[in-house]
Length: 311
Picture 1 (cartoon, rainbow, N blue to C red):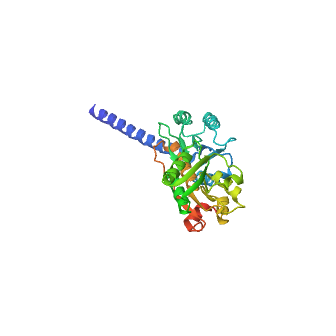
Picture 2: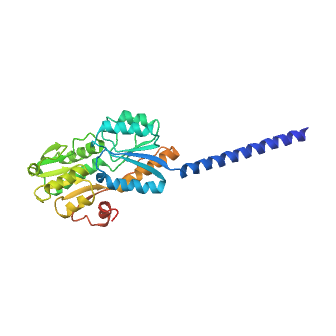
Picture 3: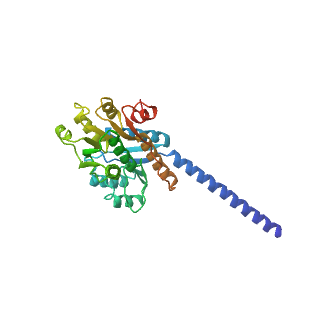
């Protein structure tokens, strides 16, 4: 009787061990299966033109290859439209996307939509985030510090007084507001009068200013195009970096820029989204490099990599 009972306990123990092994094997198999399946990722930007964010997009595409992502890109018909972004976020969620990358058009107005969406799927901001009570990861360089560097660059150009135009500085998106605050923190001790505008006026109006500071890529390109036939009549500086901006630096239209690693930003934002879907683990936002670049330094190795990442 005791022998039979001993065998029964032995069989039971063996069954428990076998079940445990099977459960572990099944769990490992499921994890491997999740890693092999593509993650459906929706990228919602705050710009109209794809050219404005071409370097970010290239970074996302590199991450898509490395982390098996199926990416849908969504640009706006009306730049920085909160309503359109809200509509796109709701639509993509209903279409069962697994994660959303968002360059937020407004740091406050999108909070409710983002917080509701985060209860269902991961939302990761890039370039411009939100100030939601619930923490939302934003992958970007330090925008306030970049604004400070832009202000220092203006002073280095010898502009310590006069009229300065801040272009694109009235946008409610977080990155622009932080850049604006950084610029003003540097200039507040100087006799510089600043004017803020969302769009550029005519070329003749720009020449009324001692300097123009563009706080985003598109305003910087627009200002350079307006001043390209009048080089060095106005000090033009800005935040952003691509082939067109580099061209205008070579021709002395733009005297200097602050450029962040946009390829790296796109890559790391997409990587974070993939890991958020597959592991569900909380993560810290990675830091993104930025550099101050002038015509004299644009062909230094590190600066060249930011301006011409795929050349």
